[in-house]
Length: 355
Image (cartoon, rainbow, N blue to C red; front, side, top):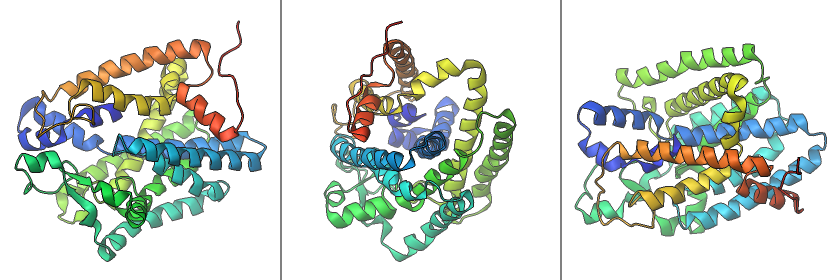
């Protein structure tokens, strides 16, 4: 999902998708847009709750999470110089914010998550949300500066991001992954992580709830003109948040049910999520012109709409093959090992003991 979204020429599809497979692909893209990042945040919350349940040394766990969060903030800010859509620094901030909430009751976590979602229209009304978003330079150069401002055509002003006030605003409410309301997905994940996600009964209930809620969120926009009842990521509307929460729960439930039969094959790629996240942007930059900075684009790109799907399949085959080979000899993914060392402030050999 993440690779396909990042490889897709969003502007080209928005302008040219009219009928047939191209229109269907654009519809699929619109559905998946932002949901990969949402799932990433939910899974982070699930992971933290699982660690709390497994660890007896809670004070040490909090210290490790603090170090991990600070490391992610630093690495994410460095990485953002290359990739403006970075989520790592936000993940680091969310990691730090989650520490005092690790043992808060689930009902209060869900109430806080709901409050963050409801706060979006309020914050939007009180602030100049669009002030630091601008049309992408490549589109301006090609004469598309008057094209409607959507997530396909705009980017955050880089100089503003690196200013103290701009960074705070970007992080808090008007960035690509703002704490209001995205931190709510982490809180949802922390709640889900306290459930018995190995229980078939629990997973089926979670799946049933997601299957009931998700179609409703997709149908509501057809019967209203309210922007807050649209599924849109800029700003992150309440309906978008509910829809993303439902799709994340659905994917988690389905993957857990499938893992009961094919757990080893499905799990290895997931265990090196950080390595996959970093490597996929480099992979796309090498193969798809203009996606990132290695092949800069002078204007709107033109390439077949099916190219992202082919690139996604190729990358996932390579990632799956690499992870299966790597875990024969090592305990954690390459970047996961470095992050663990940073969190523990202690060198640990990553190599498995010889059989």
